[in-house]
Image (cartoon, rainbow, N blue to C red):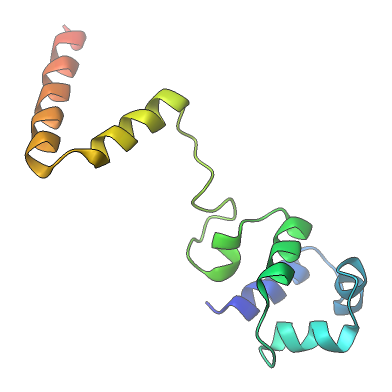
Length: 111
């Protein structure tokens, strides 16, 4: 899905007109229309303002993620995030050993 379609869909989901959005973004209606139709490239600062307006991430607007919260927000706790970050720093062999160890720990905790 293109950036421009996402921007239009967000506006429509919010039941707003192009004019209303342009006013909220402090820009001329014609320029906003160009962004939404893909006639002009959407500058980063405008994309940020659009993301803030609709409460979505730039990841979502850009199409990197289909989750409106994006990739930067996570449901992981701080300790889970630290665990993932540490895991990613390990070489493949160490990652495999850690996965095996976690399975052993799970088995012993289920007894």
